[in-house]
Image (cartoon, rainbow, N blue to C red; front, side, top):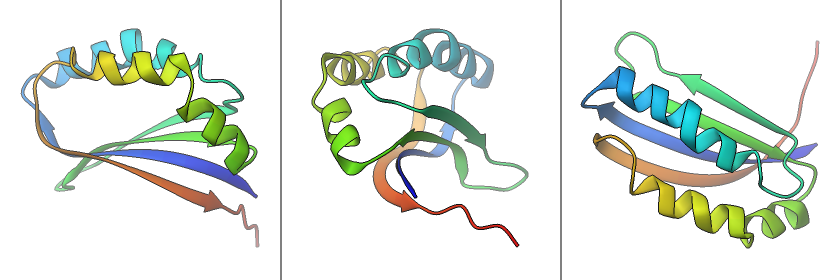
Length: 103
């Protein structure tokens, strides 16, 4: 089991190309500096989805996630969010415990 910190972008950017470029080129490098982060996955909605993007950050434990959320890198990521190209919608955060199940 691992812990995932999810950021859900419900809605849409005014300029998809600019938003996607900024997110991947400017924001993701900040996220990579979170202490103890294991993986970053970007999921994008398809077709008529109200979910534009879901960003999944994986950690080995809640303790590791707590250290990341208290870090300077997290503070920088929050400040950087104000620089995103315009996004019309809601941005939500959720912590979950994940379990990989194979059949």
